Image 1 (tube, rainbow, N blue to C red):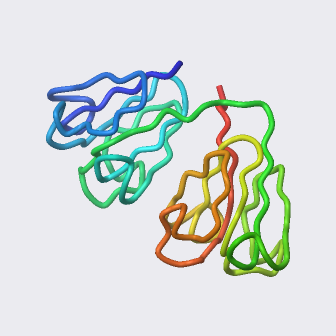
Image 2: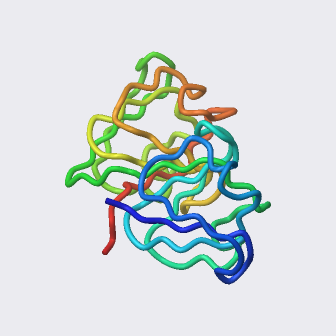
Image 3: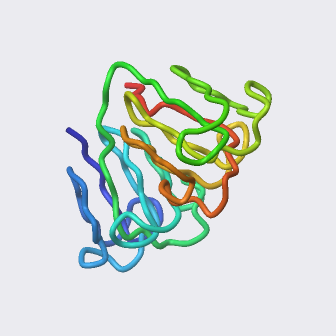
Length: 174
């Protein structure tokens, strides 16, 4: 079970809303979000309702300003609690529909280009666990939550292009 608290103002001030499960529309509870406290679980935050727009992974900790979760604005409109599992496995494909060269990962990968000589991933299949795909190496840039399922093209995970820089397993570190 997870627990996250959203605050309208910086440094955990102002009106707040506590959440312990997925919420497709947070706009009814607060108008802006300038700080967050994650008491338990790993969460993916979304700029738009219904799990759309830019995504931000937050783990247990305190985030006194929106810059701490790499956001450019104080707009958080939906959130998802990420289920925790003990094993992780993902397959990356160089072409759409799971075609072409295939690579399999069970651990984090800080640079897909260095490891597999690929700068683009056009489809993937999450076999176990939840992952976050980062647009750039070293876990930087746009983030995309990958749940256990097949993604036949990069648009299926919400990306604008097939850039894939790094991959990280979602694990509760505490």
